[in-house]
Structure formats: structure tokens, C-alpha cells
Amino acid sequence: MKVRNLQPELMDDPDIDPDVHRSALRGLARVNTISDAATPIARAIRETLLADGAVPERLSILDVATGSGDLPIRLAHLLETPGCSLELHACDISETALASTRERSAETGVPIETHALDILEQPLPEADVVTCALFMHHLTEPDAVRALQAMARAARKLLVVSDLRRSRSGLVMAAIATRLFTRSHVVHVDAIRSVQGAFTIPELEGLAGEAGLSGATVDPIRPARMLLRWQPVNR
Image (tube, rainbow, N blue to C red; front, top):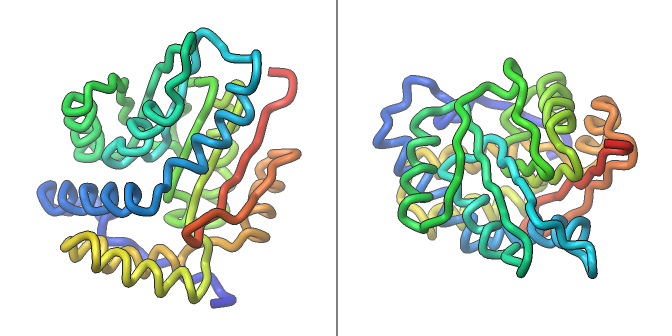
């Protein structure tokens, strides 16, 4: 899989049936939970901003392309720290996704403020931490650079981006995991297309450089994913 193969994904169709979309979002959330997708992001935040003797009274987090909001809700539990109040925000271009986020927020009792916006066209609200998971592989290279720049402008203290790594082993894992843990046909199809359209670590490092994210690091994480971490200077 040396060459990236970016294809339209079923969930990106603006005319997708809302019930089908919700089912796919639930399936993705289940896969994220089982794969423990939030833990590496939480670890990056804790190591950088919640280290010994440096716990802020308040920490705001904005999750970009949030889907059903499962990531910020999980982060709220993983980052629970005495003396630190978390303020959660989530944005997405899809109103169906945001409605699912609000439903999940009400069910779990974790408050989240939602924002309907297109990251490539509208400015993001600022937050101490900006997170983003499983979104970059949906974008062309120029749009990926624009998205990184938009998120970097919004991040006061830290930007953390998690995404799939393009590899044959990742393709196999995506095919097996999605069929084991969800019945959603959309997820079954999109999982394969997502890995085929994903970047490699060197490719994401190059995009971060083009976006002006000096000092950004990209490391492999399990399962078959990668984590970009970047801190702004003099913010």
C-alpha cells in the first residue's frame, strides 16, 4: 500500500439517511471504545498539561469532527483530576452527528457544547486543547494542511491529532474489527476505504511541516494508528 487511494466514504455523503448515519456513528463509537482510542490522546494531554504541580483550575478541550462525541466524553473520564474543571466543546459539519453528541452527552451526564461548522471554511473556537481523531484520512493533501492550520490557530496550549496509519496490517484489522463489533454496512465499507485513504507517518509529518507546525511529532500508536502532538510557541 505504497500509494494513497482516497475514495468517497459513505458516511461523507450529505444525503445519507439520518438513521443509517446514526447507526454508523454508534458502530464507530463501539469500535473506538474496544480499541481504546481515547487513551493515547488522554495520555498526551496529561503528560503535557496535567503534570506534577502544574494542574490548571480549568482546561477547555475542543474535539474537531467529533462524530457522536464519544471521544470527548471518554476524555472527561480519563482526565478527571482533582482541582481541574474540564470544559468540553465539540464541532462537526453534520447536524446528525451533533444531535448524536448531544444525546450521548445527556445520557452520560457529561456536558458538551456543540458547534456546527466546516473546519475548512469557518474559524474554530479557541480552546486550551484541540483534539481530532479519525478525520485526516477523509481529506486531500491540501485540505489536510488547511485543517491542521485551522486547528493550530485554535489551540492555545496543545494540538493532538489521532488517525489511521496506511498499511496492509491496518487494512486487515479494520476489516475484521468492524465486522466483529458492528452490523453497520456503512462502517464495513468505510473502514476499508479509510485505511486505503490514510496517510503514513512520514506523510503526516510532511503535512505538518507544510502547515507550519514546527516541532510537531508523529508517533505510532496501537492499533495501527498514529498520534500527532504539537504545542504552539508564545501563545
